[in-house]
Length: 183
Image 1 (cartoon, rainbow, N blue to C red):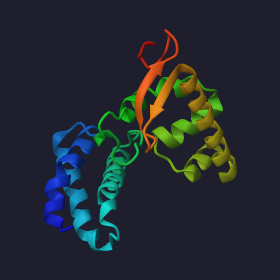
Image 2: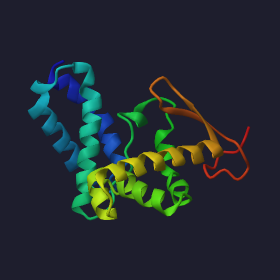
Image 3: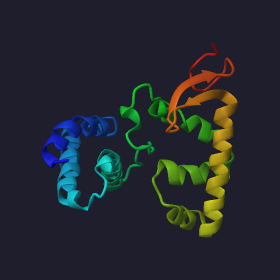
Image 4: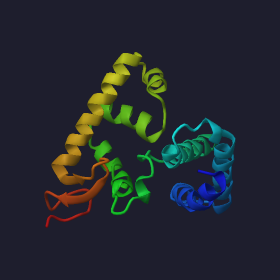
């Protein structure tokens, strides 16, 4: 794959990806330019051309996280590579209403999930901030994610595609926090 056709084909996808996460148009354009500059500098290291788009999404997400950290703000929650670009994918929608579910968990679960998933801290950073050993933080994070998943499944039935992207959501009750109503 030559870089020129790749840029023409991939630029709008990365531009949309960044636009969903960064409000200011000038900042968005700067970030997209930086992402493609990094791609150009690193393209010779890419061993599998089919991994270019996932690599770009990952690179774009990390640049967005850096952008928010430089401003002292929490970064947006991560999405799987290119999630929002796939037809019928509802991952971004679900990510948008995760916070009430996280807030409904116990304080220990809530503080570890907020630190890692919403503030973008590493497990090591979260462990230090919470006064835990790294092993304890990893264990607490794993259990908190399991409880969050159970809370989500108690509310809704999720249908996943082969890549484990959410393609359909069915509420299980009238008071579902996701906003969908049972069929």
